[in-house]
Length: 69
Image (tube, rainbow, N blue to C red):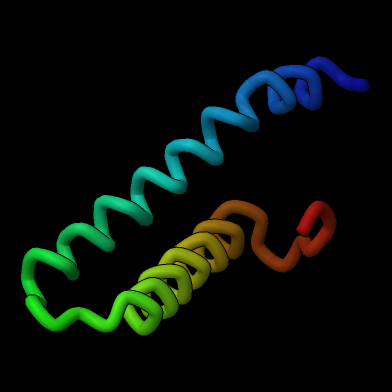
């Protein structure tokens, strides 16, 4: 295992928690703004948007490189 992989292993839990916090914060906003919020639809929209943002970040950062995906 490389030093980079060891560091990522240490940070992995933190990164996952941060992603969940972003998701939950956005779900709360939907709940506050929309009294009759459809939670499944809101979750789907938020997760799709988060995935699109991750895909765009991957493209900006790695270009056409697809390894590690």
